[in-house]
Image (cartoon, rainbow, N blue to C red):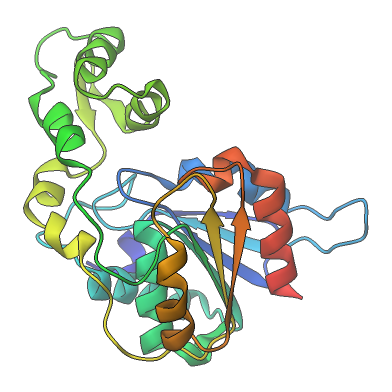
Length: 264
């Protein structure tokens, strides 16, 4: 897959500090639209507008479906994109799966980064809490004259959190008249899920790094922090007490402020 194929949206003025944002599993760049728009504009307090790139990772959003996925492949895609665009001194932001891809990018190309911001994910292996989601997506009947409401009702039978159902529905689109499809490459994600849940490599990252932890999430536990500090010696961990895993959706103002601090 060439860098030209990796879909992204660019907000804010080119030439400003670049902020590249990577979404999580089953997500798209659209999940970061509100945050990206705010970062791409100057603030009333005098903070400068930032050059924001909202990226669809491979097999997600409007980026191509591929034959394999892993963190090294995701990181390589992003590296090819930022190289083609001539970006440097990047603030690289990643949530969940995107956070692991960002960590691997920092291991391989630290010289391109000004700061790394990792949102609610740690470098370790994570448990498979996604089997019911994959089953819901795989078993949805999208043939014939299905409506979005019918697909939503099907998802709700398998996924009990209404917010997650709405999140998944952002992947549903009209591929052609009368035919719905998923933007996410469900069959590949199912096959390569172990690579997505896997830990990153052991290489030390000395790039200044901020880990943002949802206080109501179990993706970064207190007992994980010493290992994070060892592998990322120039890091700090901030907790948003009332937020769950989708910190940027539940606490956008806090996340925006943290990203802006990382660009200073």
